[in-house]
Amino acid sequence: MGTRRQFVKRGGLYVAGLGASFMFPTELLASIRKTISPNDKIQVGLIGCNGMGFTDLLSLLKNSEVEVVALCDVDENVLQKRTMDLEKGGIKKPKWYSDYRKLLEDKDVDVVVIGTPDHWHCLQLTDALDAGKDVYCEKPIANSVAESKAMLAKVNASDNMVQIGQWQRSQPHFVDAINYVHSGKLGQIRLAKAWAYQGWMQPVPVLSNSAVPEGVDYDMWLGPAKNRPFNKNRFHFSFRWFWDYAGGLMTDWGVHLIDYALYGMKASNPKSVMAMGGKFAYPDDASETPDTLQTIYDFGDFSLLWEHATGIDGGNYGRNHGIAFIGNNGTLVLDRGGWEVIPERDRPDWSQDLGPKIDPVPLQRVDANGLDLHTLNFLDAIKSRDKSILNAPIQVGYDAAMVSHLGNIAYKTGERLFWDAENEKFNHSDADALLSTEYHNGWTFPNIG
Image (cartoon, rainbow, N blue to C red; front, side, top):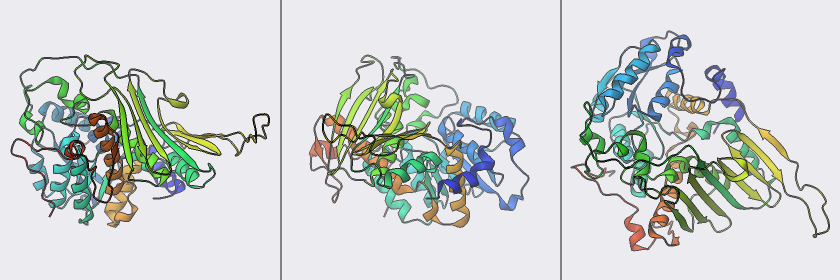
């Protein structure tokens, strides 16, 4: 991983004046991009255009060497909207596809961005590598531990560049915070916390099944998931709250924040995990995943606590999301707004206070757009053909996704589960059955070989 200074120096051109917002006005693309020879272009195809995938594409397009040549989505309405967005930025209409396999056959596409729902990631990433493409894949890398494991093996056997969309790995103040954690100044860290309190999230209304909207290839949207009637609740953004396609807040926000907790503690495999929670805020809404959850991971010499709640913003340390490293000398608190250190007091006994054990660190922040720096890092790896410089390689995606999925499995079983890291299973039949997912509708699990 590069230093903070390298990130800021390299990223200054792309983030100046943009603040922290991800949704870049497409009208400004034409003024940022410079003319460059078509032979020097990195030609990108986007699979899944409705959400974060399009934001990733816009970030890539801030670099003048990038050209979008293809869009793929199962919803023609989304393709029309995104094409209009691009044309406002002076970008000509890309080719359209509804079947991602046709996009992968396109010889004009060098790089694929995968922004589809989680249940599609495994197939699309492995197929993209088979087609010889470099890949930027949104997090979480997959919707099960088995799929994540297959993707790890596939990428490690490939020479292609694969960056996972855990963009905080490229955010300068996150890098600075972890450097401080690794300095040892906090003393022994016995507990790490990560949390996401999402006050904006309201109940998912109960809706009846309905006809498939015009212009939507619903069979292709379902793919390997169970064949169910169309329901608007399960489509587009809200797929996150249904087990067929995703893992709720645990694998949505959790992957981002648990990733940095693991990074700070230099950890990957817990010894055990247990989880408690449920649908407490909105018990009668349509969602399946828990709106309230606490998950405790035992790593032997420290514990990791994940917690989330919807409908409220009252998180730890006055932050609605974040990570805290709680050490004997002080606590480092980190979120997307910055990081600070809160010292412990030196108290030999109840009657004495000798002052702080370490110097406090006030809120630290580097004003940079982490996503832009992340996509820039991906482009650097593509041009150099050097996987070692990727800030979020497949192992980073695997570790965060695996630990998050283990937490969801503990929630589903309602038991404390002991993880056998060597054999990658629980030795608990019900829990082990949840490590993998069944493929449906004629789709088969990738043959990694």
